[in-house]
Length: 272
Picture 1: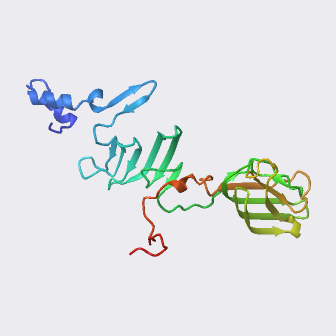
Picture 2: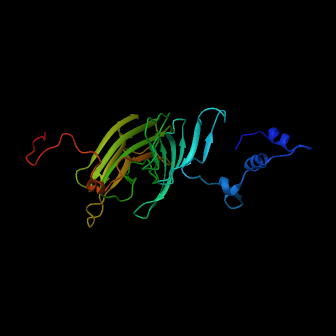
Picture 3: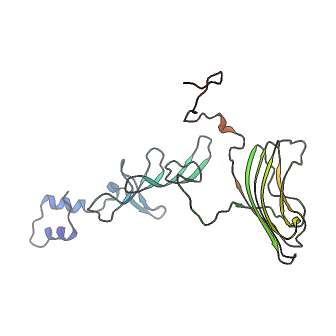
């Protein structure tokens, strides 16, 4: 089809002109056919777009007549992920939504990662002014007593905890705590502190692992307190970030794609 503007087509159909078969063909091809082009619009779904064969859904140009697209969008035919691609046809943003072999439906966003494995999977550097973990859901009064900050857990647990408390009416006492806490089936646990406080030493925030059910020896939970009371109606605020997700080490049975280097034989000698 010859590419023509509306003005060029209008000239062929003016009074006294005799349009040719080619003119009629160009006129028809210049119109949008929803079935052929993969477009539709319904009240339920809104504007519907279908990807044609192995092409793209949309492409964005600075000048449609010159050069390659600056950006494009398309569906990955192998997994139906939606990709936003740059001018080199590299996926910068990927939206994934699928049901795994375990029957669990998962949605994920990938940045330079066209097969995201987590809710947000970034194959690059992240720069931010701040970060916080999940806000603590269990209330912790700053009264000097121990309180649960987790439900009962088991397996291999690793968490980052950030907590703070302050009370102007309690002689100007303040405290911050940053800690890495780990526990493996209620065996040898670990709490690694970084603490800062203003006031006396008992103003500090403390953590401990506890197990309160003898019938469930492999279960445990994390508790928090201040060394001494900050007064009435003062609360410890805290955030938690889980650092290890395979709590039962199920992934240890999965053979990695890359082999270890160096490799050893049955006698412990390096293979050559």
